[in-house]
Amino acid sequence: MDVTDPAALDAGELLAAYAARQLNPLEALQAVTERIARRNPEINAFAVMNPQALQAARESARRWAWGEAKGALDGVPVTVKDLIDVAGLPTRRGSKVTDPAPVAEDAPLVQRLKRAGAVLIGKTTTSEFGWKTPGDCPLHGITRNPWNVAHTPGGSSAGAAAAAAAFFGPLHVGTDAGGSVRIPAAWSGVVGVKPSFGRVPQWPLGAFGHVAVAGPMARSVRDAALMLSVLAGHDAADPFSLPDAPRDYLAGIEDGVAGLRIGVLMRPGFDAPLDADGMAALEAARRGLEAQGARVSDLSVDLPDISDVFSKIWGVALARGVAQVEAGRRGLMDPGLRFVAEQFGATPGVAVIEGEALRVQAAHAMAALDVDAILCPTVPHCAPLAEAKLDDPVTALWRHWAPWTFLFNLTRQPAVSIPVGVGAAGLPTAVQVAAPLYRDDVALRVARAVERAVG
Image 1: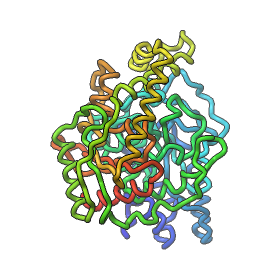
Image 2: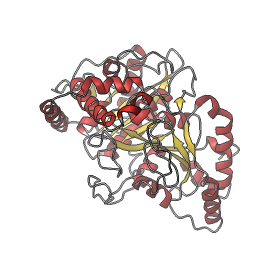
Image 3: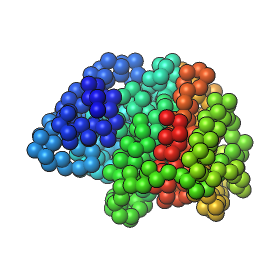
Image 4: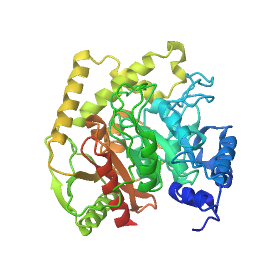
């Protein structure tokens, strides 16, 4: 293994190098921080750096020297999105209206990362309160795509995606209420996992608590599975976290797809847009799965118009969040966020209940499908410009941002975005693999097969 540039190594490679005494966590952290110092000024992936990272790396290096690694991620550099609490650091949520004081307690998933020995290097940027896909916010400005800094990395987990693509550490945690892990993963050329709802414990919950999840972002499916193994599990702080026993999501990930039934979904409840680059990526993934023995067929499913369903859920949640901010301070917030809040602030309660009923109807329809996994696009096109004008956020939601992703938030199914190649503009393309509810292992297994197929 070549360890001359530790920042270029995946988490699994770092752990192997530590075990072989070819490298130690201090050297890995130094390589990552040097890369951050060089490239982050133009990318802007971080909300705040963690001053305790160096001490954590020292302690990990001592444990490896003594042969006493304490967990599955001991010494691996990680980041978490700035919607997630880290003790001693502020949680600003990309907003000027939030409290700048450090929080007192770690979120449950941060506790899990620390118990596993991970070295938390910082918190990554997000759009304000995670409301939109472009990677900018009032507090931290514009986060840019490492592939081409004129373009957005996507959002709302903008900094996590940019950090993964720029080799600012191998493992990153984002959150996803309508595509906020998978969209930036697709636009930044990395892997993004939206686990089944409840798989990763969360607290405190944000505006989208009943559809949102936290999940891994990494440069490989195997690394994402490794991180999910650490993040997943029940926690009493989150009453909706699943009571499943701990499991290793790397187990069975190389079993292949021979004989699996995979349906290609081209209409997720409405006529979702897709450009030529996206179609080429989908066809490449389909051919790759068929070549490995999967039984791939086109899929038809009777769904309600989920663009309308999700728009209401999204808009009402944002309106509630804005209403909780003192009226005199709302002018500090993203104008697009305020626009959406105004559009949906007077939504009748009966419309909200109807939206929830249709969400469950969609989940029922997807659960009735006789397939092992679903293949579909992740995004309608490659990453747009970072400073593109936003005229109508509601239309942008289902035309340009999340038409292919929010279905799986409504149904709560696991879904993985996998990079496939590079489009005509020199920007990443991707596809999405989803699986039946709670079959995160199958989603990862099929995603790994796609990854193998496209190299």
